[in-house]
Each structure stands twice: as structure tokens, then as C-alpha cells.
Amino acid sequence: MVRLLLKTLFLEILLLLLHHSSAVDDDDLSPFPKKFLFGTASSSYQYEGGYNINGKGQSNWDNFTHGDTKIIVDGSNGDIAVDHYHRYQEDIDLLEALKVNSYRLSISWTRVLPKGRFGEINWPGIDFYNKLFDALLLKGIQPFVTLSHYDSPQELEDRYGGWLSPQSQEDFAFYADLCFKTFGDRVKYWVTFNEPNHVAPFGYRSGIYPPSRCSGSLAMVNCKEGDSEKEPFVAAHNIILSHASAVDIYRTKYQVEQRGKIGIVLSHEWYEPMSNATADKLATERARSFTFNWFLDPIIFGKYPKEMEEVLGSILPKFSTCEKKKLKKGLDFIGINYYTSFYVQDCIYTKCDSGFGISRTEGSYMISGEKNGVSIGESTPYSWFNIYPQGIEKTVTYVKDRYNNTPMFITENGYGQQDDPNFTLEDQVNDFKRIQYMENHIEALSIAIRKGADVRGYFAWSLLDNFEWIYGYTVRYGFYHVDYATLKRTARLSATWYKQFIANYTETKFTGIDNMLQTT
Ligand SMILES: *[C@@H]1O[C@H](CO)[C@@H](O)[C@H](O)[C@H]1NC(C)=O
Ligand SMILES: *[C@@H]1O[C@H](CO)[C@@H](O)[C@H](O)[C@H]1NC(C)=O
Ligand SMILES: *[C@@H]1O[C@H](CO)[C@@H](O)[C@H](O)[C@H]1NC(C)=O
Ligand SMILES: *[C@@H]1O[C@H](CO)[C@@H](O)[C@H](O)[C@H]1NC(C)=O
Image 1 (cartoon, rainbow, N blue to C red):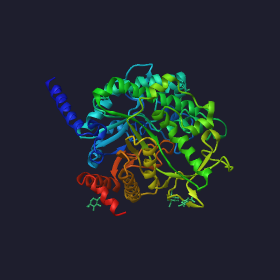
Image 2: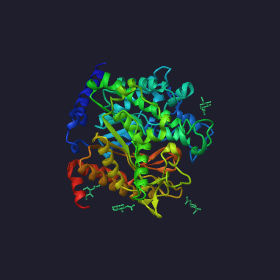
Image 3: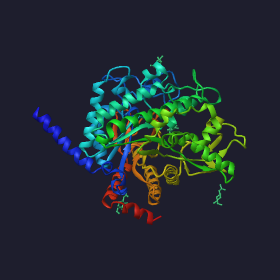
Image 4: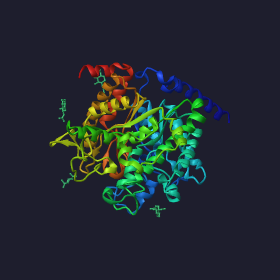
């Protein structure tokens, strides 16, 4: 008992010290660069494994990957993933070796609430995250925690159709409240949702993510049911209001005492107009509105972007007076996942054949990685992934200008290497391309920061190779290579590079990046 007390006391003193030296304590005006967060990002379904043990419930992704879907390219799933559930201590040692000061992760909703608010709390699940957060903080690493990174309880899908029902707001609020109450003494950065701007169109328009609902020409897979022209907007509406509910609870019950920050993470591709024609420039604005501002405008301005209202009319759900009031609670920061950029071409005045974006309810635009046969940046085996570092600078500057320089974090950025079974381990670990990618992107980011963008952190995707959704295990993003037969982690060159980069940066404060700028 005494030992336990001592241990608790020790932890509390440590937490006090940590919190004292963290950005959140000094509120918004802390000079940005000194307290910059450098970290790596992950998510529960992609990392943890242990999909059905110690009381965990079935998530929508468990259900989806176990079904007869042929959507995951290698037919794999996240049952084991990289077994972080059992190896978290080893993985935290890897984080410590990189000398990162923060780690982005998500809580598995069904590990703590197997059936949402319709069942019991799963205490072994709570215990897992308690141990994880304590172990991170003992090494001086701030947890940066997402509540919903794609996975949610299958129970909610079965009971009332998940995000299509306003009831989902009550479930999310219940879950968020439990997490703030249980973990908020140690977690100072909360993200409500990761990339809802993928969840809604992929789950309810193309059907490539659960619950795999789609219809008509926008369907990319065979869906049993759905309405691709309508449901994405209903799901998004309930997610936006779920965010607002969680923020309301945090602000009302916890934030004053816990002194943390809460935000949302969106995926943001950069869009360049294909030409200087007015139609293409307008199409580019529509593309931003229909993919990104779709979520942030309601949360920050209380209404959907005007481009969406004009095109969608009554398809777009309305916010009631009461809901608008709740939306006013806004957010403390915007998380941006940036990987790539596209050219955008109008499809209202010019006929477009087929592809993502061209239908009226998508915004009537066409995206392409190239113009006149020339790629926007270095190409990769993935048509969606062309390397354009300037895009991160432009994105951050755009978000700064549109949303009044709300604090931002780069919550994901990284380089995916298509796996090749013929690679030797040596090929696998000599990841010069990844180093170059990150160097160039951080450099471009620093230009935006120098011009006044309030960016407070950078999280590389990812610490480890992991389950990459529909790509399964066929693309690798890690600073550490994972051998999926043995789950052994092996450092790549990029791990050494990131560690050195952070060390340089920390020693010289911001001059490391100043020097980088002078050489450009
Ligand atoms: C997924 O959920 C549906 C609806 O509850 C159920 O019918 C189906 O059996 C589940 N699939 C798997 C593989 O668990
Ligand atoms: C658009 O105009 C600008 C300024 O005149 C020019 O620099 C740019 O290359 C033009 N872009 C295209 C796609 O033609
Ligand atoms: C791997 O090597 C074999 C034999 O050289 C070759 O036939 C195969 O195409 C290679 N696989 C890939 C993905 O390059
Ligand atoms: C760190 O600083 C050293 C000395 O200035 C430099 O040679 C090295 O390239 C830097 N490393 C990184 C990863 O920025």
C-alpha cells in the first residue's frame, strides 16, 4: 500500500513537471517554436491487434474485414496488426530512442465500451490505456489522443445504422465523457475524429470503408444498400454534431481543471487549378469546400460552405438553433494530415468522363496528378500519391487564412513504400526516399511557419509499418520495418535521421530550421 502510494505520488510529481513544461499550460500565447511537438502517429486498429481479447467488442472494421469483402487488396485484417497491444512497452522504448516528445495514438472505442453505451465498461480495456499513458509519460512523451480513428462499435451500426442516425451523437458523447473523466488527468491533447472527410465519402459514397454503403455510378464496390448522393452528408452531419457534443462536454466539465486542448483531424490534399481559366479556379474552390471546409466551416463558422449549399440545396442537412449554439464551442486546434496534391479541372462547363469528384453532389470537378502529361511532383506506384512538398506550405497557409490562424498541428505526413516480396531486409531499411520526403516537407512547412502560420507540432506517419486499411500490409510507412512473420521491429535509416533531426532542432531551438531556410 505504501509502495503504491509512493508510486502514485512519484507519478503525480512527474506529471506536474511534465505539464509545466508543455505547451498547453501557457495557453495560447506561448512563443510557438520552443514548445513544438515532434512525434509519430498511429491508430488503434492499425497497430493494436488483440481484436477480441480481454473483453474487447466487435468494431465496424472487425466486421468489415471479417466479411466476404474483397476490398482489402491482400485480404488481410487488423486482428494482430503489429501486436502493439502486447508490445506497447517495446514500442515506447522505440519512441524514446527517437527522442520524440509526443506520440499520436487512438483509443479503440470497443476496447473500453464493447457495445457503446448499451453495455458495461470494459475495465481491462481501461487498464490497458492507463498503463500505456503512464508508460509514455514516464519517458516524457505527451500522448496526443484521438477518440475515433475510423473504428466504432458494430453494435451502433446494428442498432440504429451508426453515423446515419442522430443517436450516434449520444453514443459518441458518452464515450468521450468516459475518456475525459478517466484519462484526462494525463491526456492534454484530444482529437475527436480522424479524417471524417474520408469516413463519410468512403463509407457512404464509394463504399470502400465500412459500413460499405453505396449506390449508382458513385459506387466503387458492390454494396447491398445505400444512397451515394445523400448518405455521405447525413453521416457527416452527425459526425460534426458528435464533435460538437464532445467539445461541449470537455469545455463544461473538464477543461478548466484538466487544462488540455481539443480539436479535430482532417485529411487535406492540396488542389491546384489545372489552368488559369475561371472555371478551373472555381472548381478548385469547390473541391476544397466539398472535401475539407465541409467539416471545418460548420465547426468554426456554424454553417456549411456556400458552394455546398448552392449545389446541394435540401440534400444538405440543416443545423437547428440549438445545434448552432452547440457548434459555437468550436475547437482549440486543427489537425492536418497531408500527403499529396492534385490538379483540379472543372466539370460543369466541360464534360468529364469518369472519376472521383465529377458528380454534382461531389462538387463537379475532376482531379488529376498530372497536367499535359507532366506529374505535379515525383510520382510513385500509387496514382493518388505524387510528391509535392510545396503542397504542405500552401495547405497550412490556406487554413491559416481561412480560419483566422487557429493553432494547427500536422497530425500525419509520411512516405509509403509499396512492398516488394523480393526486397532484402537491407533494401527495406535503406529508405532514402522517405528521408528526402520528410526533409522536403518539413522544410516547406517551416516556410509557412516563418510567414506566420501558427503550427505547433509535426507527427510523422508512422513509427512502424502497419495495417494500411484497404492496402492491408502491402505498403510500408514506418521508421521501423516490421517483419510480419515474427513481428520483429528493425530501425530504418529514417529512424536515425528523425532522431538526429529532432536532436539538432532541440539543441539549436529554431535555428536549425532557420539554417535550412538560408540554404534554399
Ligand atoms: C457484420 O455485422 C452484420 C450485422 O450485424 C452481421 O450480420 C454479420 O454477420 C457481421 N459479420 C461478421 C463477419 O461478423
Ligand atoms: C497562371 O497565371 C500565372 C500568372 O500569370 C502563371 O504564372 C501561371 O503559370 C499560370 N498557370 C497556368 C496553369 O497557366
Ligand atoms: C520477384 O522476383 C521474381 C524472380 O526474379 C520475379 O519473377 C518477380 O516478378 C519478382 N516480383 C516482383 C514483385 O518484382
Ligand atoms: C544535424 O546537424 C549536423 C551538424 O550541423 C548536420 O551535419 C546534420 O546533417 C544534421 N542532421 C539532420 C538530420 O538534420
